[in-house]
Length: 205
Image 1 (spheres, rainbow, N blue to C red):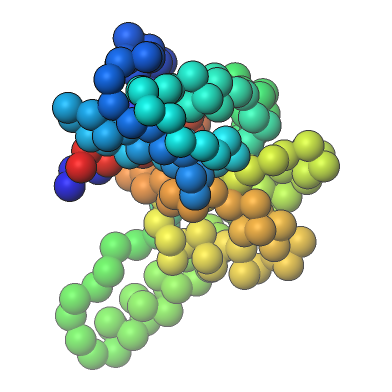
Image 2: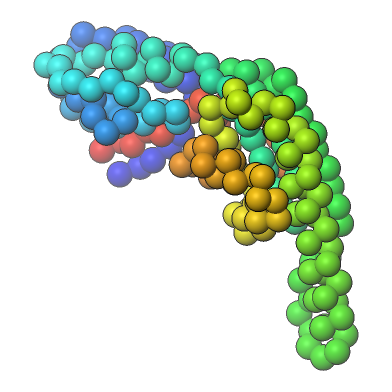
């Protein structure tokens, strides 16, 4: 079974021509399954409330869900940088990014290695604290309206940043199931993220 994430526009182009074709369609547990010549399962990022079974290929409920816009917050952190943003649909309406030097890991042993490790830990701590402070500044004004939160970057760095500020606990409560792994959290990363936010998980059975 192969798993891919496909943008919502591409999903519409792929599935719209199949409406009414021979096959069977099942909506359940937040996903749509088509049993036809090329069986596949589609799970939208933001869920799929529709349920039902059809004796033909019926993709309209899925496409309606994929077309729906949401207000989404994003918090991306890696050692070296962070990016925080707010999206109305695919439009980035608030953002702030930053970088802070963190030394690479030191492979040698001895006292110099210990000093190096302490310095690196200090740099990493400063970065995650700064990232958390920025997240509060950018996301808090939108807190009552944000429906979902996209967490990404490096899991360990994100966990460390969230742990520094109890007032960020709501980010994890609204976090999407998918973790958005990005190599370099920058402004261009935020600008490109909507494609992945609205991409559906497609499993070809």
